[in-house]
Length: 175
Image 1 (cartoon, one colour):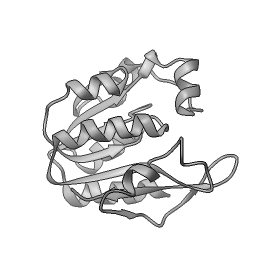
Image 2 (cartoon, rainbow, N blue to C red):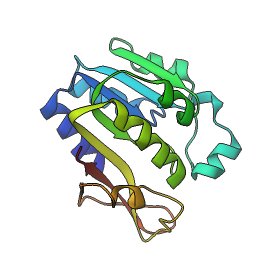
Image 3 (tube, one colour):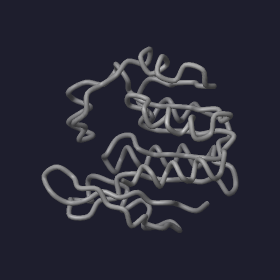
Image 4 (spheres, helix red, strand yellow):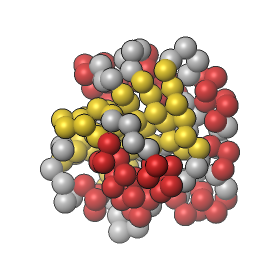
């Protein structure tokens, strides 16, 4: 599974500060923090602000979790969660980070906005990974393909199937 690759990089790099867009239920955050327990973690998500409208816009098919339940999942670690639309919350974020996992909304517009905001706070040499690099799916509206194609990047060969057809992979971007 592609997430194992991500965790290998967290374990190897032991980042000072991890930023995750798309915290969802906190499980990936927990895995990253268990792999690097001294890291500070910044997590961004809609949490309970998500709605049927945002689900449709971002092609989200997963259940939603409250910010409080995610804080409980991450008890014992240095964590700050940010609730709301990342076009607003990430724009107001100013802490330097050396590890980024972009796995929030699936629309190209949201991913592009997230990238523009994240690259401001990524330190030189930061490890940056995008999820949602699609094969066999309309990438004009969804996924990070058109965004990373203009950047120095490496598509990770591990692919997972997508319900309804196609596959999804992750991409490492170099800054």
